[in-house]
Length: 81
Image 1: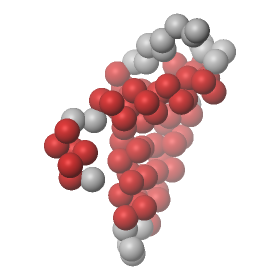
Image 2: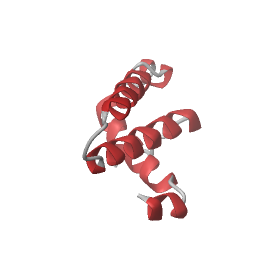
Image 3: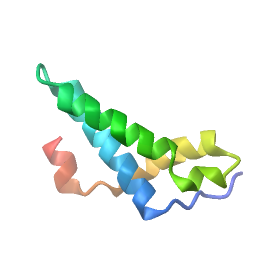
Image 4: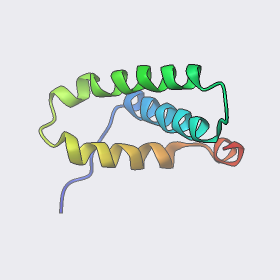
């Protein structure tokens, strides 16, 4: 079994913002340009984060990061989504 990943808080925050933006984009019927641009910006920030430079298991780390971000969202934000 793999040891648990330890992600920096700013990386988890970036991933949570990406997931929130993605969910908003999926629900928006029109006027999605700003959301798409934000998603692209967040994707770039996630992919170029310094954490990934030192990690050889970045693919598995990405899955764990999405899980960590999903569990770090406060309950009131989940209810709003």
